[in-house]
Image 1 (cartoon, one colour):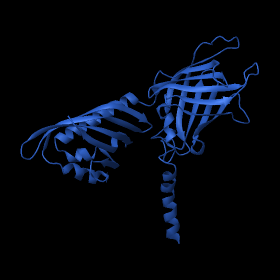
Image 2: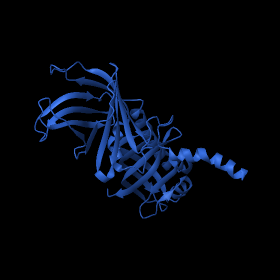
Image 3: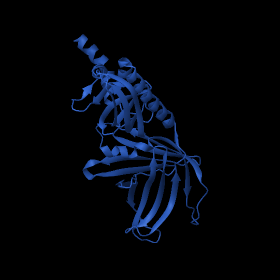
Length: 319
């Protein structure tokens, strides 16, 4: 009985870590997306982190106030099932939102709070990401003259490096549009190091090509995470470094040239997706030389501080 109790006590931290592995932590300060969350959670993925922004609001006389520096911070919460953000302005006005996508209603619900104007009940906006890539949210609100309408919030020009936002009053038909607040977060991310990370991934692809040409299968295997999976054509999924190493060792002939050319690398937390083309030249065992080309998609994952391939799928294309 005592032994059982000790084992239960020892296992408790492991169980707890597993339950909250997507929460913000020292290693992942902005959290991670939970694979069990609705896919729409990734609508806000480019904004995860901190951005330097400028905020500009309309004054009572309807002219625009001077732009004010602001930090806008986004992170994953609820073990990676939702998104929380907060704005920090030098004027001492702070605000934030809890953003949850409810699959049953296929909509985002955003609950807003602020300081010093705290509210006993939180106003709620609803909306979706459009085909154009904007995130648009609405909340019913009358105009000062009593006309029915909405206060509309729009995230647009959304990129890994930043985004823009505007708050507008619109009538029910959205034919009358009156902007009252605009924020420009295009100065770049803080504390995310995307440019540095992009360089790291490109360097990792070059190391993979070098190892492939040198038949350095240990280095090839170490290009992948411990729980990596590869998806070769006409084969089942291959999992784990040892199995992946065995796969690459099974090739025939000599690789004379190998090059990976990324078309796009985008980041979401401590993951990144990367797609593009690869090309190379090899000789078969009978001495015949051939050139080849293919396309690929890779999901990268940070493991022990290094970017490694987590999911790797590819197939040849005709030259």
